[in-house]
Picture 1 (tube, rainbow, N blue to C red):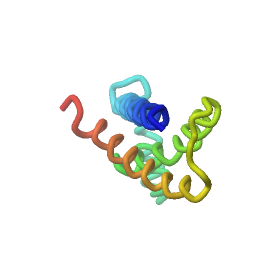
Picture 2: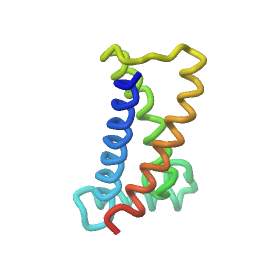
Picture 3: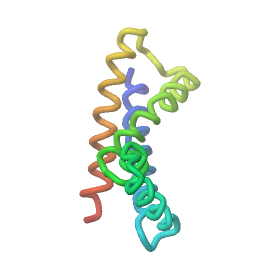
Length: 114
């Protein structure tokens, strides 16, 4: 169980670091800064979900990355033979994982290094 918790903490930090790297990269003046033009087109076209999730809203982007990282996290732990939870506990753990990952991602992109 200790290995599960340590790997979970490491994975949360890795996902938060990836989120920060992605968030900085899509800002104007950085290597993916032209992405802002595409976001603006989606915003003007009324495609608000795409606009928000793909970089127009910090919390929406942080939450989307947290949700998308959960299957990768589970696959990694299953491959490492470190997944100790049954099916019901896994469903509950999904809520815990996504909640913590979203808040950690949001902290990294809004408060860290500011």
